[in-house]
Length: 466
Image (cartoon, rainbow, N blue to C red; front, side, top):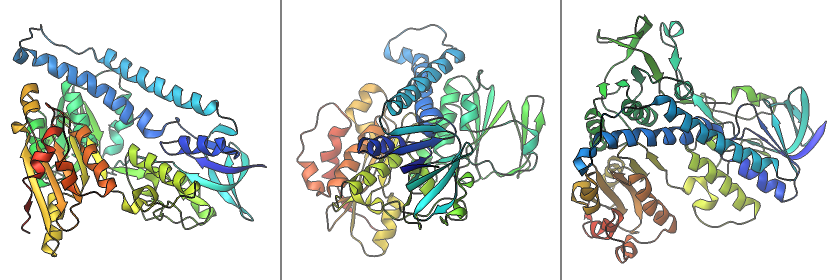
């Protein structure tokens, strides 16, 4: 039996950096991965989809080049070339990551599926490739995968998730997408711009339900303008094979047919192979591992990082988990989000075009707080009034800022429009300082940018009526 100071199971966005850091500090470390190093982000998420998004955006811009005085001929997409560019980018990113770890002293990379077998005193026992390892500490970073609902007939049709969709060598003729949250909307627009007909089926009456209603409506408007069809308040009764590919029967009696069907209906944790019961680690009913704000499970010595702990479903939250662990390893106890996952505001983006950048609470949540007596200040600004947006002919969207009147700290922000995925960092970074919004009003911004309007917008804050 080989012993390690630390064993990391799963190599998503938190584990590689943590493994290298521990090894550089002199610990004997093993990192176990059963699939590809880099997890969802590098292999099936951020890296490939944002690379493919660029090809889709170039195609879209070429089709509208005449608006800018540029004459082009008929625009067509060579899907195989776009996909090859995407796959080359993934391979480069994955190779760089594995090379970095392979060159780290005291770090052993093990390709296989790791699972607990029990304990030997204070040490944890882990089986991988028919070998038993022991470890003083274990870090779990096994992430999530697509959730596919058990629907009548689903076993009779070829079903795609975000992974298998990107493995296609030909662009779907008509892509049916089940689910109108961030993944479904992003991929829907990408594949529409690459040449597919796209229809989105959603059980709710509005898309992107985490967002305020007007934001959801605005997103649907610009996607509909690109001829993406939405079927809302629609539940699937059954699926069956069809000459075109797949047939979907909806609860209202309608039938939709398409060449391919993608399920973007949420994520489920990769925890079932870990044999957590062998060491007593607790999960919720879905399999997400319970942790405190420092990612400790109920079993001392075992931490859970990244999507598996249910505290965020993003690359940046997973990496931030590592940063919090690093602060703890250094013995630092600063007061703030760097030492406590409960204190960090939720920050994310939806990479449609235009993108959505979000941090903190929504307007609907602000109204709930105001109804309970908290004094809230809000302000909004249309992208149609932003000079840079006009110059770029990208005037769709809005800016919304939410501030606590007493502390003068930001509570949330919404940026829907040009650069929204980047500009939101201005507010999220500022929230980390806990500074008054009045200091931002004194800033000297660059013209012409979208961000230059933030001091102006803040000067228009008004009290929110619940």
